[in-house]
Length: 140
Image 1 (tube, rainbow, N blue to C red):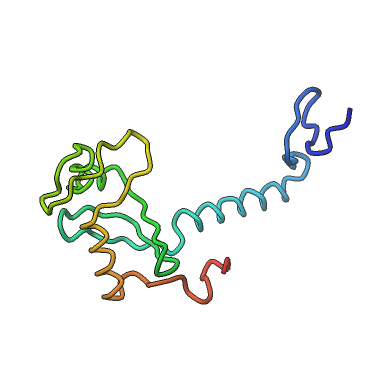
Image 2 (cartoon, rainbow, N blue to C red):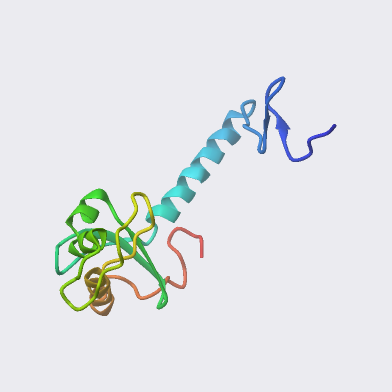
């Protein structure tokens, strides 16, 4: 039986892609391209913004008026009053009943106060309102 989707990497092992162990220059280029992709997708265009209510700092990127990427770190999650209220399932003090308890590791809804801080950052020009016409990383 032939395994067309895989490449033999040992007597009994198969991989979906070659490992280029016999071509060190190509292996180095693949590793560099992978590093560059990872940096672009995780950090490209991200700007730090501080919540004006609790001073939690997150990384933010807007790719359009409808899409905002937010990267939380442990300090920001701990510091955010809105997330704390959601974890407790309580009232945010503004009539909201909260979103109920958050599950560990689950995707978290963002805090309304942080969203307002992001909107302020966009209006002040700290965060671009959408992706640039040409990407400095060369992806768009």
